[in-house]
Length: 518
Image (cartoon, rainbow, N blue to C red; front, side, top):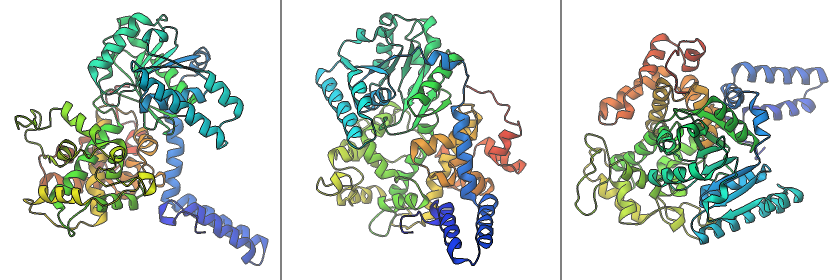
C-alpha cells in the first residue's frame, strides 16, 4: 500500500484494484465480491477524471504515431545511420539507433570528443547489458555496428544522417552544404536535431532536389532515455519523408509527433513563457525568508505532478543554454557597453538569470552550482541544496518591487506559470503549427514530464481548470502585466469560451478550418 501512488496523484485505479482484492476476502460471497468490483470499475469508467486522462493519452499517442502504410517498405531499406556530433545529444541519438539494430557512424571534428563519445556509448550499452536490459547477442551486434570518424565524407553511403551539433545556424548550414556534395544517394534523409532554429533556413543550404528529404528530428535529452521526438516539417519536406521519419522513430522505440516550423516548434515555444514567468516571480515576489523562493516554485509544480520543478530542470539542462538563446534573440545587455539588447524594448524582463551566468558562473549541475547548490558528496552531486548566493542575488533584484517579500499560494504559482504555457499552445493551434490539441498533450507528457494523470496541458485546461477560468486568469494577469505578451489571451481560447466548448470539442466538431503548416 505504501508503494502505491496517492489517489490524488494518479493512483485512483491502483487503489480501486486494492479495494477489489480486499472485497474478495472481506465480503461473505463470491457474487458480492464481483458486484463490488463491478461498482469500482463503473465508477472509474464514468466518474474518474484520471481515467479519462489516461485514455486520452492512450489514443493521442496512437494518433500522433500513425502514418502511411507504404513507409514500411521504405523502412526495410534503411540500414546505416550517420550521426554528426559526439556531444550529449549525438551520443544519445547514436545509442537509440544502435539498440534498434542499425549500423551507426558517429562523426565529430574533435578527435578527443569523438573518442569520449564512443567510450560513453559503449559504457551505456554495456551497462544496459549488465542490468539485463540488453541481451548479450544484441550487445555484441550493437558494439560491432558502431563506427566513428572525424571525416564527414565517411557518411557518404548512409541512408539517414542526423545532425546533432550545437545550436548555431551558421555551423549547421555549413554542415548541410557539405553533406549536399558528399552523400551519394539523392534520396538519403538529411535531418537536423535543432531544438529552435528554422528548418527551412537549414534546408536552404541543400540543392533544391534534396530539400524534400530534409526535416527536423528533434530528440530530447538524454536522447537514449526520453521517448519524444518532434518531427519538424519544412516548407519543402515531402509527405513521404515525414512518413519514413515517423516510422523510423517508432522503430527506435520513440513517440513521434509531426509539427510545423517556427521558433521553438511546439515544446520549447511553450516552455518559453513557463520559464520566463518562473524567473519573474522571483524578481518581483521574492526577497528574504518571506518572499517567493526558488524552492517554493519548484515545490508547487512538483505537488501539481510535474516530474521536476522548473529551476531544477534549468540546472539539469544547463543555465548557459537559456542564456545563449536570449543572446541570440538580442535580449542581453552588452557586458562591455552596458547597452540593452535591441529586441528587449517594451517587454517585462529581469536580468537575474543573465547575471547568475555572466558574473557568478552558475551554469547548473555540471559545475555544482546553478539556481541551487550541489555537493558531489550529497546525492551524487544531483540533490538541489539551498544557495545563499542565489538568495542574495534575488534580494538584489527584488529590492525595488512593490510585491517584494510576498508569499504566493501554491495553486496561484501553478496558474501563473502554467496558464501562459497553455495560452501559447492555443496560439500554436491557431497558427497550424500543431494539427490537434492531443499532439500538444503527447509532447508535454513525453518530453517535459507533465503528469499523465492530468492528460497533458490542454486536457488539464479543458477538463480540470475549465477554459472560462483560464481566460479570466489570463485577462487578469495581462491587465497586471501588459508588457508580457504571453498573457494576452489567444483568439482561439476566446472563441472556445464563447461557444461553450473545450478545445478538443472544437477540433472534433470540424470548426478548426485553419491553415495548417502540416
